[in-house]
Length: 312
Image (cartoon, rainbow, N blue to C red; front, side, top):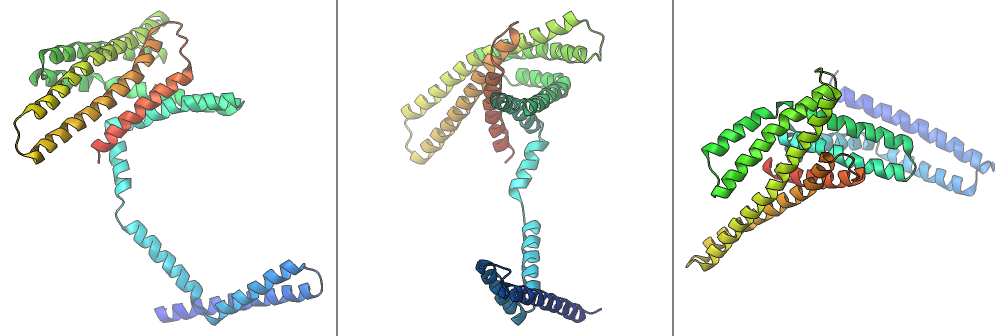
């Protein structure tokens, strides 16, 4: 069948539809004259009849409208999608994948609190189950955490930090993580009865892994203090230097401003982590679960923003 015959058939079909609908509208109009419909309904039906008359005057209008919609969809799907590409890069990276689930894990704790406060017990329990599953999943994917940790330890020794203090801080912090990962692995494998660890060993492993993480967070505050001192030193050096080129001076000041912004983000993340590490390190802690959710959500958003910029 040729394209012309196809179009003719389509036009005939649309004409039949128009005639049928016009007859139905006329029938409805006659019944309204008999007094079965209200005045408002009769007015509406007259508008329908008028609309159908306009459609009958141009029987290809429906086909043209469908063609325009099809072209719009084709252009939308055929063109580039930079935001979608960015999201895929973000989720495909190891850090972005973890930060997405971290945000889910902690934000759902806030949702659980909101639902419970409003008396939605069933919904609250379902969201709590999701939060616990995500938490369990994030611990599971950290079973390979020692591998990149070993690579970072080698890197830190091959490329020393700017100052001797930062170098020793890196070594101590790396040591705490080397202790943290195996203890967390023992806790997770024992809690799921994958390895035959006693309940006491599982319990101690969970607490001590968090305590080593708490040490890392505490040392991070010291590291951030040293980094802030270096940033301030760079700023003073730029202002006191005999620099004639104002453009070059502005470039260096912008670089220092970017370092300062990154430093503030790291400080915020560490400040949110600190109460969490203390909460999980102390037996019988009364730190509310909703506060855990709030602190974790803020840390997750800040880290996700860093990864989002890095994957741009």
